[in-house]
Picture 1 (cartoon, helix red, strand yellow):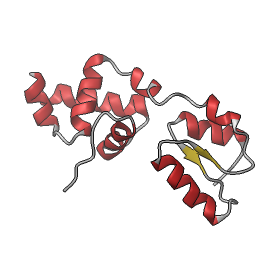
Picture 2 (picture 1 turned 90 degrees about the vertical axis):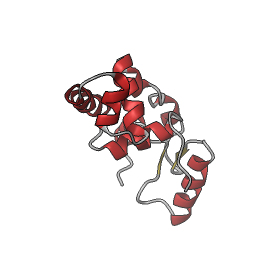
Picture 3 (picture 1 turned 135 degrees about the vertical axis):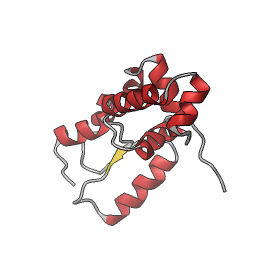
Length: 130
C-alpha cells in the first residue's frame, strides 16, 4: 500500500519476496506473482532496485532459532500436532507448547499456518498434493 523506501525495506526484511505499490498498474500485480512464483524477487516500477539487495536473506529469521526450536518449527510446520512433536522428540506437550510460543515470537508469527507458510517459502517442507 505504502511505497516509502523505509516501508519497502521493512517489508523485504520481514521476508517478502516482492512489493507492489497500491499506485502500480494492475498488470504489475500479475507480473509480481509470476516473478515470485518463478523464484525471482519483484519491486514495482519506480522503486529503487537496490532495495532488493538490502533485504534480509530468507534464512536469517530462522537462524535465530535454537536447534531444538528449529526441529519443533519444522515438525509443527508440516502439520504435526504438539502432542505428536512431544512424542517423537521425547518431550512433554507443555515443553513443545512453550517452544512453539517462543518460535512464533522470535519469527514474528501469530499462527501455525504462518509457520507452515514460512517453512514452505524456505523449502523446509513440501506442499502436499491431494
